[in-house]
Each structure stands twice: as structure tokens, then as C-alpha cells.
Length: 137
Image (cartoon, rainbow, N blue to C red):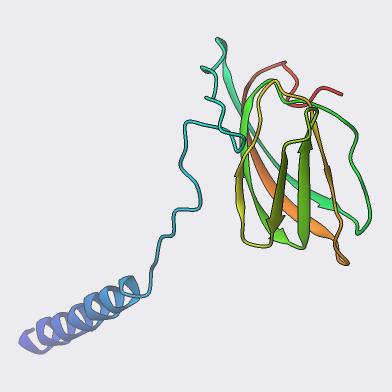
């Protein structure tokens, strides 16, 4: 019985030590935290209703340009690959490269275009409410 308890203790010690070592390899990097969109405007309050989170992976081919649009909900994203330029109706411009984050405009018309040589890929998180659009053209 002492041998079984001893084996258990050694196994448990090795397991805990292994887990603790794995924790040393974890890192957290804050990509964005803001109460303002990228153009410096304050974000609006959240709309009333049942919250609904939408996450999109958007791929924009080299040379492509999106239509003018706006988002009636707060959203943010991270450009995973390529380059992306975002331009507002009044010509404010933001250039993103892979790894950059964006706190997007709300209720302000804008469009994006890929002026780079590879597909731009962005993950965007929308904090909306059920049965309401996240993008309006």
C-alpha cells in the first residue's frame, strides 16, 4: 500500500510540475482597449435588446474595394494577413497591416480597400442585438 501511495505521490508531483511549467509558456497580449473608434469619436452606448455577438472572417482580394457602408453596432477586429486601408466619407484614412487591430466606426459611412499584393484577411467581432443588421450599405 505504501508503494502505491508513493507511486501516486510521485506521479501527482510530476503532473503538477508539468502543468506549472506549461503555465510559464502562456502569454496574453492586449490588442485593443478603447472607448473611442479609430477616428477618435466616442463609441455609442449599447442598444437595448437581446445581445447577439457575430464574428466574421473577411477576405478581401488584392486590389478589391468594398462598397461604402456603416455599422450600427460596436465592432472591432484584427487584421491577420495583408494590408487594408479604411476611408471615411469625409476622407479620414487608416492604414492597417497584418497584426494591427481596429476599433471600427459606428454609424459613420466608410469603405475599405486592399491596396496590397496579397489577400487581406480580418476577423471582426460585432456586439449587436438579435434581428438587427451589423452592416448597412
